[in-house]
Length: 253
Image (cartoon, rainbow, N blue to C red; front, side, top):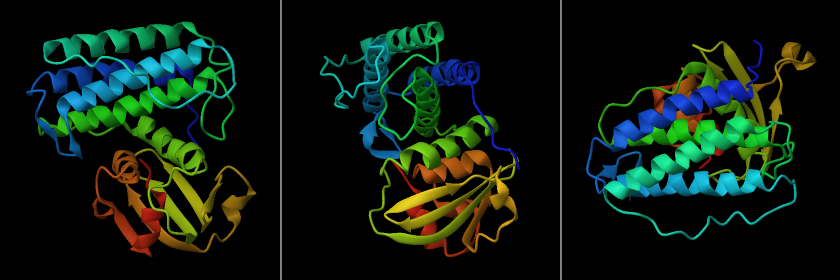
C-alpha cells in the first residue's frame, strides 16, 4: 500500500475545517464543563491550551531560522468567559493567515528528527487541531471521526516524528514488530520496537516482501487508530491479534 504524502494545501484545508468545528463544539457547553477525553481539563483549559500553542507556533515560524528555541509556552493572560472564545478565534485566524502566507520550505525549528522547515508546523497544527476538535466534541457527546486521509497522515506523524523524538507515553522497553492497518485509507505501517528506540519500516521499499515477524496486528479505521495512539480511545476499539501489550508502547501524548 502506498504512503500518503501531505502538502501545505492539504494540511491547511484540514486546519480550516477542524478549527471552526472546534469553535462550534466549545460554544455549545459551559466553559467549566469537563472534557471526558482529557479527564483533568475543562473546556476552557482546552481553549487556552490550543490558543497558546497557536501563539507559540506563530512565534517559532516567524523567526525564519532553524536554530533551537525553548519549548516552554509563552506566559500570557488567559481570558475567561466569552472573551476566551474571542481570543481563541483571533489566535486561530492569525495562525492560518501566517501559515498560508509562508513558503513551506522556509527554515523553522522543530523538536523532531525532521527537516527544520515551516511545513512541519503546518502539518503539526492540522493534527493538533483535529485531535483537540475531537476532544471538544466529547464534551457535547457528539464526536465525529478524524477524516480518513488526515488521520492516516496523523498516524505517520506519530511514527515518524513523535516516537523517534522519544515522546513515548510508556517508558518501559519493548521489542517486536507491530503492524497497523487503516482499512478506510488503504494504508499500513510496520513498526519495529527496539527497546527504548523504534524503526518505521517503510512499505514503499524492498521490505514489502520481507517477513517482518509481526508480534501484533491492529486493524481499524484510520481515525480509531490515530485516537488510540493518542490515548483518546482504547485499543479494544480495533481488531487486535497477537501481543496487544506491544501497542501500549506506541502511545504518545
